[in-house]
Image 1 (cartoon, each protein chain N blue to C red):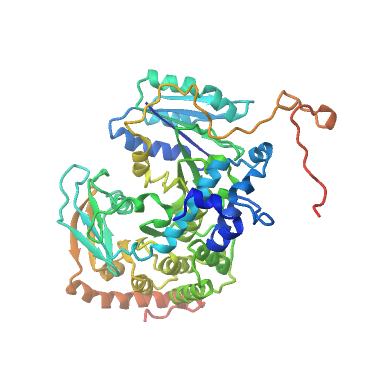
Image 2 (cartoon, rainbow over the protein chains, first blue to last red):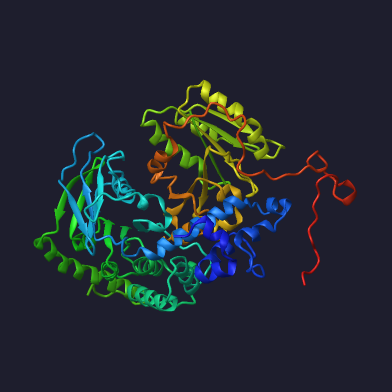
Length: 338
Length: 232
């Protein structure tokens, strides 16, 4: 913790030495601190006369308080990896949109579990997700409660941007930044204050290539990746670099990406995986399925061994389709389905 | 009555976010009204009428939109009180990025979108830096990594704000935002005597007064020249 008084006492160079991440703050606030390092931050701001301060839209009190707040947030962001650990998530029932009680007692999901969510469009899948993200405490339209590690959680998950509980992946998401894969991953790693940036980038690119049908390298611009490659990179990046302990996936398309490996990667990185899907292979890979109807959870189905046995056959069918896809891409003529 | 001010660069989804949020607020039995400030034209008032809330629009025309806002905000507040509103929302676009119609002690929300580029938080002035709540939109179409990077940039320029993601199309996040907008302990009778959080962009030059001709001899008043010399 740092206080306003601390900031007032120490020079900018001491500040930089002690909290290297303040560089980001100075850069994003467009403050040129070079050659002013001996001053305190307040003295530095006082150098601007009234007109210049107004031109730059600087209010000294607001700016100094922002710096204090920023340093404290970053300190807690770095420090609380352990106390932020989410081992389990528990959903306690509320009501559906007709006010009827939901049809389950208590649902606990643990790290490395895969839970599928099924139900027609508009049935309340987004609301369930929103309840989880907001750590609902009977204060949302469904009156559900969400427990973290079996306990009611404080509100930090709700209100601080560094501590988001849920990371989301969906078919509609695209990369929009004009950067290469390398630059893109560097930027993300820096924003997470990762120390061994190169190592993390290597892990992500090799995991992504392990998932993608067609390989790509670090110099490829993210916007020219194919659909499958983009999805592979998004999944690998979310698994390895995102801090959010829960990952919500809204379908993974069956093209250009190995979906089984994708789920294994997420589970291997100790994520809790929630997946909205009606794809039989994915749904049967899940440990359980939540069935949503009329805005409420209507059923929770454990994937039975009997159901799992169908997976082998389904995978065979999938292989046939994948193989045909591969042949078509190479320009071959299809002569048999095998 | 509670008063909240929404602002944000054009086309970030302010109106969509407000409409989705109104849905959630109305379900709590609260009476909401909206005043939309814009420059030349807006049809957003019709969108608000469609969801059944009282609405007024103000077009600043040839005036600076923010100066227009602050010149009218007290009358707008009185309109809301007369209608017996529980919550009055004002919406205005920050057209020059330097603008900030925020008032001290009045809740202020800045809406900014993921598509605007990661350097945008740095470019937007008091409108972003002095907001109490920053709503980030269009998160459904960019990657998780880009959402995280963008949110961290927003947090760097305004660490004290609550940062939230709201989807203006599906409404995801709008209920949660609505819980932060209304507080029954808050009450505004009048804004007279209250102050802006930051001064507005100033100018009083010949062009403010309708001059159209170009050239030094036509420029009077508060005129500033660019430095075209090489910096050594």
